Amino acid sequence: MEPQIGRRDFLKTAAPVNVGVAAAASALTAKPLDEVRVGFIGVGERGSAILRQLLRVQGCRLAAICDLRPERVAAMQRVVEKSGQPAPAAYDRGESDYLRLCDRGDLDLVAIATPWNLHARMCVAALRAGKHAATETPPAQTIAECWQMVEAAE
Image (cartoon, rainbow, N blue to C red; front, side, top):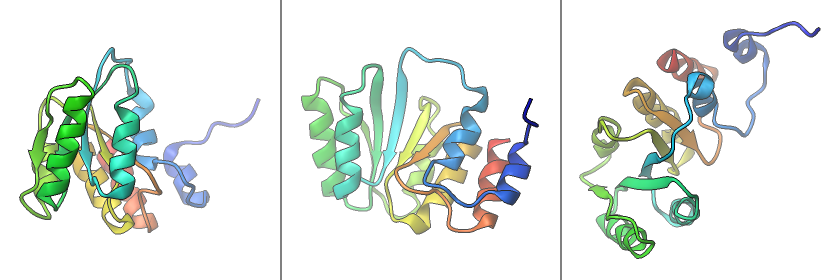
């Protein structure tokens, strides 16, 4: 039988990999949901493509969208409505408006598709608010950011 390794020991020894560490950490105690209510941060080219893919997932509801550019949020609200879901709430009041999104009580997951240097702080905000967090690229650039996410998830 192979020895068990804890999350802290894993982070001390493992090289960063292209997975959502914050999502993995927060998912360790997750219970299955019939519907996953998603808040989405960052709907530029990559983010809008990922959002469109999420709309095709059964049981996935886009409840909120955040971006620095209000026209992007409005465009994605229309895409969500055309898919048959209600228009998600808009968060477009500046660089820290993602914090308001994370504080919503009706979200299960915060999906992040922003520039890499923002992923860790956004994951930490989501985790501290009791949400799961997922990124489309590595969520952290430093070991310190990895620790922040682990501690927020714990």
